[in-house]
Structures are given as C-alpha cells and as structure tokens.
Image 1 (spheres, rainbow, N blue to C red):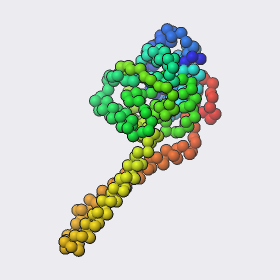
Image 2 (image 1 turned 30 degrees about the horizontal axis):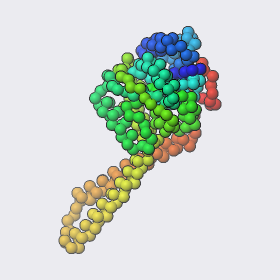
Image 3 (image 1 turned 90 degrees about the vertical axis):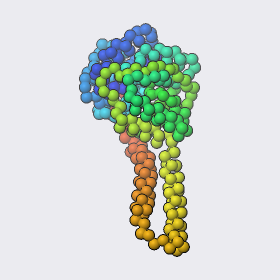
Image 4 (image 1 turned 180 degrees about the horizontal axis):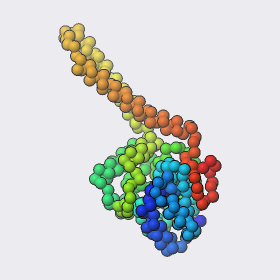
Amino acid sequence: MDLSIIVPIYNEEINLPVLYARLAAMLDALLLETEVIFVNDGSRDRSLELMQGFAARDPRMHYITFSRNFGHQVAITAGLDLSRGAAVVVMDGDLQDPPELIPELYAKLHEGYEVVYAKRRSRQGESAIKLFTAKMFYRILARITSVNIPIDTGDFRIVSRKVVEALKLMPEQNKFIRGQISWIGYKQTFLEFDRSERAGGEPGYTYSKLIKLALDGITSFSDLPLRIASIGGFVVSGVAFLVMLYAVYARFFLKNYGIGWPSLMVSVLFLGGIQLMAIGIIGEYVARLGANTRQRPLYIIDETDLPLKKPNC
C-alpha cells in the first residue's frame, strides 16, 4: 500500500458525495495503490450510509464507525492505527482541505522529508473573531511550548510510516496530533495553500470544542500555566505581606483607626480569585493525569471493513 488517506467525519452528509468524487478523480490520476479511510465519529445523519456505499462500489474506500462520538483527534488516531500505507495523509471532510493538493504533498514527502504539512496562506469564509482567536492561539502556543509547532496549520498533512509508528507509542488520552507530530521531530517542511470556506453543513468544531483542543495543546506541551500559578502565588503573598506591614505601621505610628471594610473585602476577593484560578489550573493537569491512569481505550469501533489491529477496539 503506497498511500493511506484518513478523513474524520462528523455529520458530513451534504459534503460526502462531492468529497468522494474529488478524491476518486484525484486517485485515478495519481496511479498509486491507495486506501481512503473514512472515520465516522458518531454522526447523526446519513454519513455512515454514504460511506458504506462508497466502500461497496470502490475497493479503495473503507470506513470505521465508532460506538459514539469520541472527538476529532481520536478519529484521526483510529485511522492512523488501522492505516496500511507507506505514507499517510490526514485531511478534514468538509472540503476546506483540497484533495487536489495531495499529489503535491506526496511528491514533496519523497524529496527526503518525513512530514509535509499544509500551511494556510489564507482562510476563506471565516469570521473575524475566529481568525483573530486562531492567530493568537497559534502564536501563544508557539511561545509557551518547548516544541516548535508550526503556525497557521491544522491537521492537513502527509507523514511517513515512520512517523505513524512513533505516534502509536504515544498513548495519552487528550490527543493533540499536530503537537505530537512536531514533538516527534524528523525532517519536516510545508506547502502553502488557500483554504476554502466550508462547502456545506455546520462546522463540527464549536467554540467549546476549540477551547478544549486549545487546553489539550497547552497542557500537553507546556508547564507554563503551572509556573504562572506558582509565581502568582508568590507575588500575591508578597503584596499581602507588604499590606500587613503597612497596616501595622498605620495603626501604631499614624494612629489610623479607620474600619477599612472596602479594602478588606477587595483584598479577600482578590486573594480568593487568585487561589481559585491556581486550583483550576492545577485541576486541569490532574484531570488529564487521571484520564491517562485509567487506561481506557481511546475509542470503541462499532463496525469497519478493515482488519482490526488493536485489541478491545
């Protein structure tokens, strides 16, 4: 098998026929032994029925369907686990990642690279708020992590079998695939492309899911929030100590007997807010440690036409 293409799917009934047509046309011209793995992540529409139809009439098409929705990053992981290609492409199913770019990615990979990621030159159909928050997230993540995670990139990329096998050795529950690939290392490069707007349907990534993905990325590759909590604790304690010294000085030397309820309440609320924030940050890390120690399977496969490689899945 020369090439595997992994496409996580969540409620993409509208886009799947066009996606299949464009993938099939691209593969016909590519002339490689190829498999396309659609991963149904608990879709509630006719996505699974369409994928099964593709697999029935085209031997290059395969499908995996989960027992429930496990998330975009886990769907990519399942596709990687069951893929057989010497090279593997990961792309979204909403047609924002153009299948026609895959031959260029494949050719670039064989120039001596292990990873070629698609870098967004422009993003059409995105709101100003989403563009700004995405830009800030990537740049903040690049500054606070010890891993060089490429800016303005998603999961659309091609990786070698060597990288896929390395990803299988990383069993954490809170997946952040693009960060893990950067952490693995090897020789990496990029191709720029103009990202189209979503062809149809509603985006699978809501703002709450984007926030969760951002937290997974930050907590997986940076200890900076914990350091901020610790430093903040020392700073607040120092300020409180200075305020205490001033209160003693005012009482005995300035003869200031004012009640001071406003300043007292402000101090209590400020200190309480800092403590709750620090506890929340620590709790995020502890929750992820707990998820990993439980060692539950990342996903449960309900049905697939591919041979299973992992037990209990």
